[in-house]
Length: 176
Image (cartoon, rainbow, N blue to C red; front, side, top):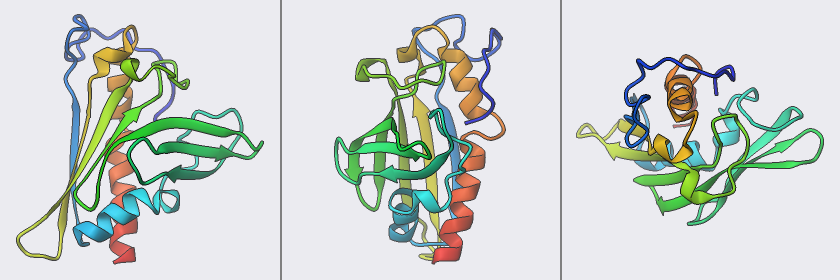
């Protein structure tokens, strides 16, 4: 995700009240079928995910999504370590994928699923049959506790989900 930083800006929706922090919602239309878009986002994530976006201590060499409920989402690092950062909660190809965001507000692995936010992706075929609307919602930031509003701001910033969806779409369109 973007540069790791803390944020004390109370203007972020819900930052003063951790009972609810507004989700981050992004969408993009891709020139690919829902099947193709889903496959590129999940099975081919390593082909478009930036090498700078990881929580490991050495450079990332590969990112993997295990395509099944409770499947791991992780990166492999140059030093040989496996660095988990997500868990598949719902696996419904080619229409829906929900994962636990297992990264805490200081960008470390979160072991407790109850303290994880969720990222849902929906792949919606359009009427023209040639494109798919991909909708992303990153929600439940309040589960992270202190630092939740700052995390929301970071994944919503330049280099966050909007930029990642653009990289994904470029790859999905080339692959179709």
